[in-house]
Image (tube, rainbow, N blue to C red; front, side):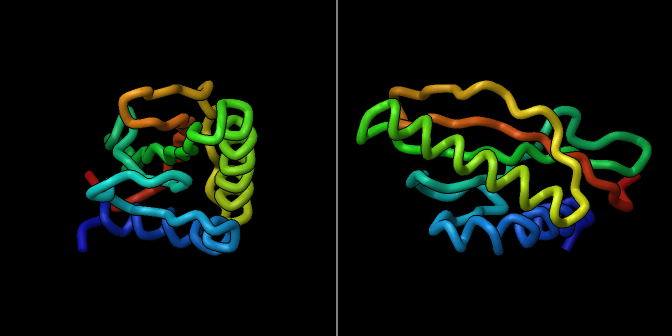
Length: 121
């Protein structure tokens, strides 16, 4: 596995114990089909910096099918779970962006970046 892959696996492991307990799968790569609620790890911006750090975006997805209020409440729960799990594993989350709606995909999402040290050069 690559250093980047190791970073994704480490972040997924940090999230999985908390979120799987909430019935929310965590994907360390984009899944073939997105079925909220779920959390997906994506390359962040900047993805790789010369100091040997990578940024991953932890994207929490909720489904507004039951209504926007229900989706926002579920998304808030997911974001709190993400942030808590990262802190619990010594991974400081960055600022979580405001929720974004994707009517075509039928999702409401919020992104929390996390920057972790790696051996990438």
